[in-house]
Amino acid sequence: MAARAYWQGQIRLALVSIPVEIYAATRSGAKIAFRQIYEPSGEPIKYEKTAAGVGPVDKDDIISGYEISKGNYVLLEDREIEAVKIESKKTLELVQFVGADEIDPLYFEKPYYVAPADDLAEEAFVVLREALRQAGKIGLGQLSIRGSEKLVALKPCGKGLLLETLRYADEVRKGQSFFTDVTSEQPRADLLDLAATLIKQRNAPFDPAEFHDRYADALRKLIDRKAKSKSKSAILEDTEDPEPRSGSNVIDLMAALKKSVGETGRSPAKQAPAKTATNKKPAARKRA
Image (cartoon, rainbow, N blue to C red; front, side):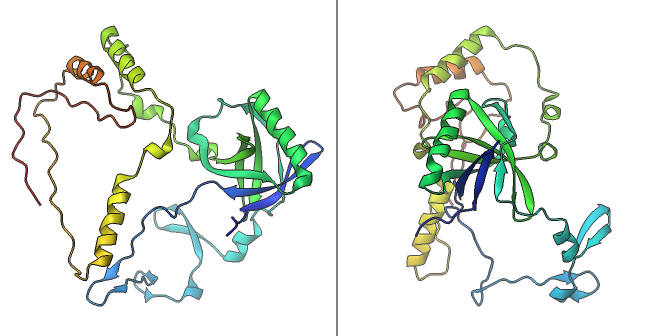
């Protein structure tokens, strides 16, 4: 089945218009979702809309409300909300260009692939792609879709273009307030050298296929075993408790770094983190 375009329209650069199609670059189907089930009957749980002091309410009596203070709401009807929605336009105008490294990663939200809509659009599409690549720039514009307006960034991606929606400034929390108690003093040179050596040893090209969601994999295996089993009871396996933490907060950072640097021969992506040395014997492990 052919992928369905998320948006169809044209990219405009001054007097040049390029017909394009935009497709979602990610998918959420790989995630495992659960429904709540009433165990005695096996039926899924449903939720009624209720109001305090009233009980269940009719769907036609529900409107939208925005809380302006505790318990105080501005009530808005659907027609009022519809009236202020941005008209969906079929044009993405590139109004500014910035350096590829000028946008903080915090602002990037969701990626989409951009492809020429037809053979006639291909030449202009390729010219825009290569001009962005040679200049090392990202194009910025605002895309009106489904009643809202999104800030977007456009950049080269292989033979195509990648469009990423961006968060607006008021959607990003400033992080410096979380780091006020972190020291600004430089670490010891010998510790820094060991850490740099460890980073160099584990340096490798990024390959996303090397990483897997182990929790999701384990859930799928459990679901498969339950689906094949006629028993409703949970399938339990022997599990081990994690090793107890040391009673002391004092960590021999130098020893830990030296031990980590000495552990070679394993692939960088799969190498396990070094454990800090401790004189305390681990407690006896329990089984589930």
